[in-house]
Length: 431
Image (cartoon, rainbow, N blue to C red):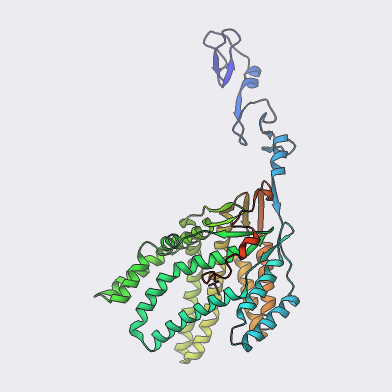
């Protein structure tokens, strides 16, 4: 674009003042006919305009004009939903102490009912836009899952202590069952989690879970190596473990993408856009935080041992900074890792923003641990409540559109959720 010569009608460049026919403009007219690109909508506008004629972008303030009709309409279609956790330490303490006592008295059988009571309290006190979530799980399917978990653990314990030659095959069976455990647990938790009388849905298959968990054939190589014990297996195992350690952030990304991408609510499927490189950056930064602490810990431990020759004292001296460094690195991974997941997750018109901080998480973990130890465990409900509230306070949800866009289906309405409750495979395998 430029200006049109009034003498011959040709289009001239906005930087020129003379047309090829000889007609010459004065500077003021040239300035009034120059164009510029709006950064808001990429619409061409004349340079003497104060606002974009399409979206109302204010060129003087270099920001969108909130009074423009289009921006008012957009603001009406996008709003922030309040996330709030209203749990009380006193209320949850009563639930927690009853659950603990009855679980001990029944040798763990009541743990399934305890989990239902606990999760119903957590869900009912977690509100999005003023509406609480609901947990619809039943104790019997959870008890089935825990019986299966107990049998699996017993097989591992017996094979590792009494029949060690069977241990590789137990590992192999566990690897085969692991994808099934993942999809059944995710499906159960989704089906029995409800919001606005609609349940979530998880439709991942065993084949999809295998693709997400096999990690580029490295895990099968390790299992085959353990079972067949081929020559030089230690070198193969070390190489496979080293490669898997480097690729671990990409593996975590695959798992997150699998879970989120196969979760749906109200006919809308989840989308996950984070990259493996972003996860690698989080883990690398956490490792760089821990390295100086590890060096200081090793120097302190060796110094104390060389002077006092007391292994127990040197262990105590190194344990405190070592544990502090571990907590800091772990808090960094949890804070920035969770932020990365939430910020790159989309569910229909819902966008999420997490603002967790590594320092805040580390302080939370340390104070919770000290309180629980000092109170011999009685401060556990206090620690749980403040952790859930901290997470809720640092999560923002923005809705583009309306919640009515999420419509129920035959697979998502609450009434249909219990149709297959008696199915043996409808179990909760997450502890």
